[in-house]
Amino acid sequence: MSIDWIHFTPWTALAGGILLGLAASAFVLINGRILGISGILGGLLVPQKGDTGWRVAFMLGLLVAPLLYAALAPASFITLPRIDAGTTRIVLAGVLVGVGTRYGSGCTSGHGVCGMSRLSPRSLAATASFMVAGFVTVFALRSWL
Amino acid sequence: MNRISEFFVGLVFGVGLMLSGMTDPGKVIGFLNLAGPWDPSLALVMGGAVAVGYFGFAVAKRRSSNLLGGALRLPTSNAIDRRLLLGSLLFGAGWGLAGFCPGPALVSMAAGQPKALVFVLAMLAGMAVFEVLERGLYRSGAAPNKA
Image (cartoon, rainbow over all chains, first blue to last red; front, top):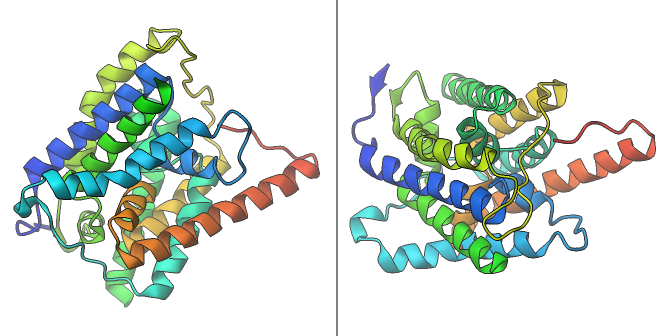
């Protein structure tokens, strides 16, 4: 294995990660909820009375973030995303992520950030599973396509 | 107060995702690409988040209510079952295919990235499929355990 020094961004990665940890901590301490994107979004598909306001408020904040970031971040912090996948692969990926996160009760935020923070064996098992599946998928794509 | 706090938590989380570089699928794939030139950034994102979150949740575990006086809802399920593992494997496969997970996809969509919009629509369709399947299961009486 060789390190991709060109794309490796240790400081912004660490600083961004700390913000994610602060947000997850604030959410559980102030609002008493787990910051899990797939669960928060998924719960809006079949709205339950009295259980939508907090989801909408959180989602609005998340969706406004790019505006704030564009206004505040120095130009060198704004990079153009590299998206190699074509439309077919994007659609297949989206469906898998949608079904998989709901069936597995969480994604990178709920199981990864929150679950590992609270040392949950269940979330650790989930995180290991989606990490391994991600490694294998990328390896397969790089090997066969 | 609740709505304001939820909004700002979402905002901070979104800014964190952008700063960390995780809204760039190329960086996510770069991390998942163990065989090739490997970009370790995602490990530092996760490490930074968990290092801070550990303390937040350590405090939360000792409390019975949140700071606004409402309920503090921590997950109660400990089950490591087929649902959890199979669902997570499917999610990981989709994650590796495009380099998007739910949060970064939503943020990228809001930033005006057309492919992220396509991804989010497909993800919502996948979530809808799950809801339909779940309801079918409940109706037939084989209700699975919820997290």
